[in-house]
Image (cartoon, rainbow, N blue to C red; front, side, top):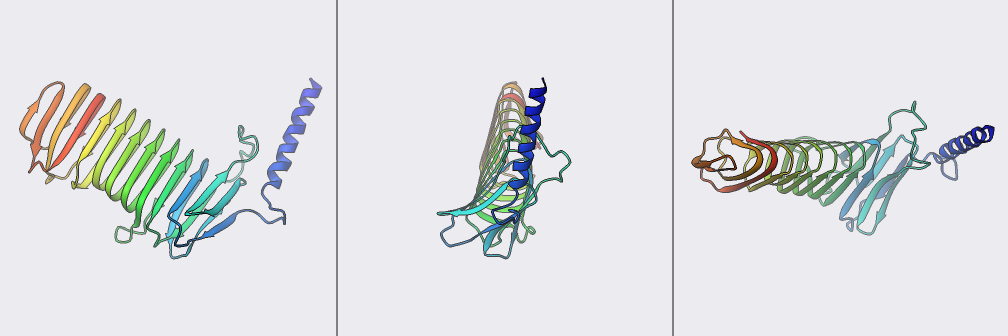
Length: 288
């Protein structure tokens, strides 16, 4: 028994020595700031993070810089056409050995005139990424979000192609204009306000809410199990085609050529220009 206790104490001591030493490079300086120059060849900024509170800040600069107050290794590096920002967790990774340490925060500064592609992968934690205002939004060709478990807040964005995959988490989006928007929600909640663009969404289990400022393209939503709220402008022009296996689709907006029964709803609002296709296996969709 004594040998086991001694062994555990030795392992714990070695861990703490390693953990403290990992904060410094060979010259004893802390590895808390790093950056990579933005060149014409860079086509993608890729962020891979977990267990950290992250803020992405566009500003007037010519490089990508990250500042981190945690102990894990922060890396910002250019690899061909990609700048990668990542945090690698060291040690055993199974136990939180520093329960009294301050909250880990990461700030990523990117050029405000960078308009190409970004990919953000969040294992857990929080991410905030906002443009300065509606008149000065973040503008990107493509933004891809992969969320394992965590919370994300996006605001003031114009994205040509937007793709989001949420395994389990909560996402809030405020003021997003896009040509194509793809949303895959396995479990969690997604709340989108002031949205303009096409919508293709799949909900396995969770809650999805869209407030559409202007209907400019088609909407296609599939719900395996969950609830969807779709807030459309009163002057929206759409043709509704909804099918239900177990659940309900309701529409508060007046429809012409309306045809409803327990399993489906069809109708036209306004000119009927844009198609809205809804497929519900188990759950509810409310259009208002």
